[in-house]
Amino acid sequence: MKDIVYTRMSGWIPNVIREDGELKLMLGAGADANHEPRTFTFPITEAHLAVIQEDLARHLLLWSAVLPLCEAAGTRGPLDEDAAVALLDPILLAEPWDVDALFQRVDWDRSRLVAHGADIRLLERGQLYAAMRTATETPNTKRAQEYLANRRRARRGTGLGPLDAALLRYTGRYVHGATVPKRLPDAVDSALLPEVMRVIATAEQACAGMRIGRDPRRGKRATDKGDWKRMEATVEAAVRRAHPELVDDGVRTVSFLLCSEAADRSRGMPLEDDEEAAGHGADSGGSAGKTALTFTDDKEAEKKWLRDGPRTAAAEFWEFVADRSSGDNEVFTIEDEAMGEGVQLHFYADSIARITTLRAGRGGSDPEYLVEYALVDGIRGYRTLVSAFVRGGCAALDPHGPWMTDVAEFERARRRRKARQTP
Image (cartoon, rainbow, N blue to C red; front, side, top):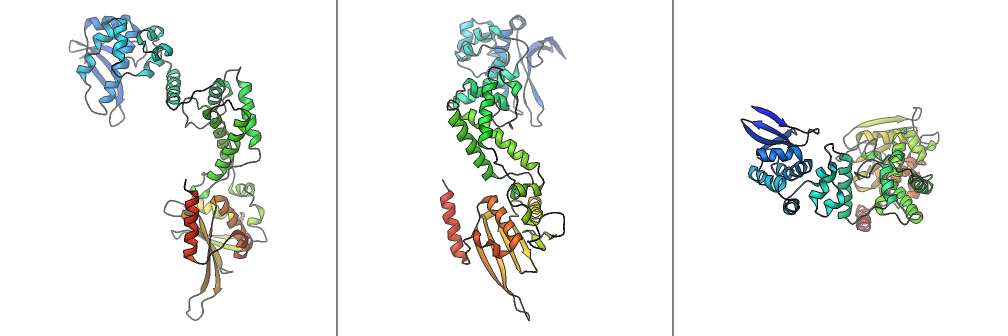
């Protein structure tokens, strides 16, 4: 039988229970293999209970020291009860200086103490007993998160100035660097907000007119990494020139914000508008272009496009790619059967082949084709080549070479490019 003997306002602070006539400290920590919280208990005495009831600081210090033992138990192991019991007298009954000395020798959970109001300056000096004079029963989890974030920065040698910190708060990335940035002016001290907005204005002016297009090779919502890197570099260079006092964390959170917003705008556009913005618009399926095309992939899927349909050839093709492209499906073809020509895109190799029928098959003989290869520079290069082909066929691709008929020569060119790109 289990009875609650003593509990505090915050349900996570360890409770004292009486189980089968024995006093025990009970706390929840960690999780089992099914991600359910684990509960641990170990015996205490009446003297320990009296201190726990009267001294919040020592209660929290004990909790901080026991938590690593719970974590060591993992998903199914038992608590090292002897180690837990050995913490009771040194934390609950010893003199303050002996308490501090103990915490120099054992593992303890810093964030728990910070959340409950510990004086961080004293905590960092190893004066834990004095640091807990400001302890509160109600935790402030945001304070603990910010403390841990600052410790991570300190370990990599980064210290934030007031403006850096304000920029990270403005973008919502002060605690977690991987958070998708947002604009949160209310999170910034009003005295620093005008300076934050000046930095944002510098970034916006630098990338005005730039865009981040989509990359259908990686799915419907994927964006062009090359466009992202170009905008990122432009923003960061401008911000560093105008605000040299900012550290990398401050500068990068601004570029991440602007790039993320540009990528979101692109994802919200129909593919036709995305093509238009990329500079491959009306001519892609206009009257001067092809009248009928067939799209295929490496899995034998097929899609027909006709000029009298509602969408451009390029938009239809890139939607086909976005729907079908995957790690094992990276070869796509556009064919004009009437003209006997087509292009084959090799996404895995950043290359393209244009195929022209030189002689149709007759009397059971095979047709004769001219196959020429070229290297492609990312999704921008592919967009340019696709748009040129649907406008004017293989002849329109002449300026986008060099085109190579010798496979060995082409493979050497690929290897040379790869060597240049490898750091």
